[in-house]
Every structure is written in structure tokens, then in C-alpha cells.
Image (cartoon, rainbow, N blue to C red; front, side, top):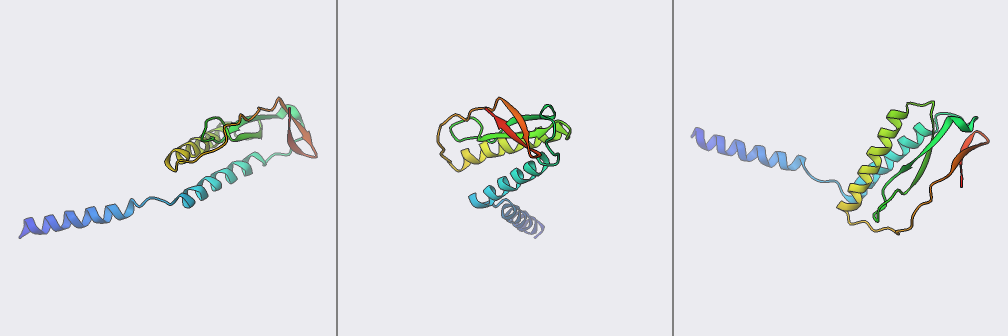
Length: 127
């Protein structure tokens, strides 16, 4: 009797565990990526652009064909280690998303900016 009870208990536990491992839909995962990007943009926008020398930029995102989806400007006065970590997490998550969902994109190469200039308190890319 105890053996039967243990078998039923183990079977029920494995069914419950399987329920918790239900995968997100593509739309849900895209929403997670969108939320990650919004948080990165909010962090990047915490400083006003007054001095061009206080700003830098980095590649962000992952195109399905490879390479970044764009570039983002950030002030060197923020916690740059945290910021770049979040950018890296987002880029890696987007790369995994692209692979998982067989995303296609154009294979154009995004040109990196040469520098950043401050215009009306906002960073702008200079090419």
C-alpha cells in the first residue's frame, strides 16, 4: 500500500512540476524584451546632455542575421557597469529569442556613430 501511495505521490509531483514549466508565447517573450529595453532607455535618459565628453555609446540588440539592432547613448556619470550589463543581458536575450522563434531580419549593417553631440539637453549621434 505504501509503495502505491509513493508512486502516486511521485507521479502527481511530476505532473505539477510540468505545469510550472509551461513556456511563454512569442508575444509574451517579446513583451519581456520590450520591458528590458524600456528599462535600459530610462537608465540612459537619467542625465541631461550638457557636455559631449560626458557621453559614450554602445551597440545594443541582436539582429537575426548578426550584428546589433542599433546603438544607445549613455552618460559616463551613471553606473556604467550596471548599464552595460543590462545592455548585454538584453542583447543576449534578443539573440536567444531570434533563434528560438526563427526570427528573420534584413542583413544590413548598422553604421556606428563617430561621436555624440549634445543638442537641447539630449544626446545625438554624429556620423
